[in-house]
Length: 339
Image 1 (spheres, rainbow, N blue to C red):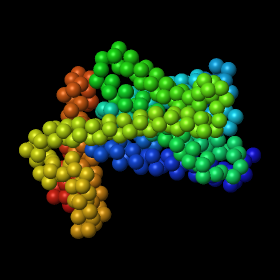
Image 2: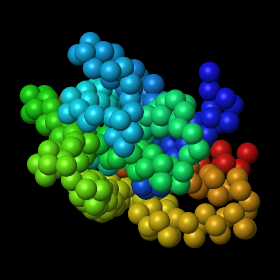
Image 3: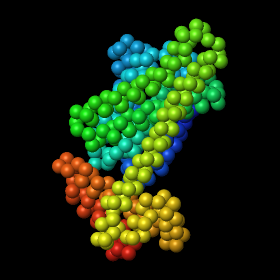
């Protein structure tokens, strides 16, 4: 039975990075923030369902019933493990996407959902590793656990990005793209986990320097992938800003969106300045109301975009009227807001 100190250390190393990841993912989602309940659900299912499914599959396949991180002492890298874990994460992600289709719009949403699930998987891996007893946790071990969690978030983001890209494809094409996305994540994880072992066989019995070099090379591939994800996010921001400007233009003419909101809705600095100004001049309630109004305007823009892109199988058209009513109710000059 683990002692209370070990349990506390395991919880902290699982929860603190996960909450930090959720905070960062919420910041990344600039214009139409995903509800916190979805992000928490992604994290929770990534921490519980995906690891449980992975362990069950590995047992069936005759592998050890455990999820030790790649750097764990005595672990023999197994290419099948990365494949199983990627499939488990992909299945969980697909299930969540299917259950919240109204909220799932594009590549950026896929990156956020997938990264949250992957972060949950990494949290479970860290928790079980520390709970198993690691003696005194060194700074190096903590750093390795944090990097391992970031890697899992990256693998999940890869699958999510492909799912988001495939959102508008035909069913057959979307299925093929999904399989390729899972296969890509599985290859990246397998390459990262097994490269040191492969180099050990190729070089005979390499010294510590060669082993370190192989680990650095494996990590470099993932860091380049993360850099690519950052570029994808930046491109998604530009694309989403264009959607907001195009879809909300006529809402200004109809009096739904104010000119001040329209002028700043795609500017992070502009939105923050207005919120800070309201916080100082009118209080917290007014600032939060503006924040909610920006979110509703973003949802309205993407709702209209979905209706045009997915005619016949898009969202409920009545949702647009509900969002317009919500925007009016959050207007500081509306009767609803001043009651």
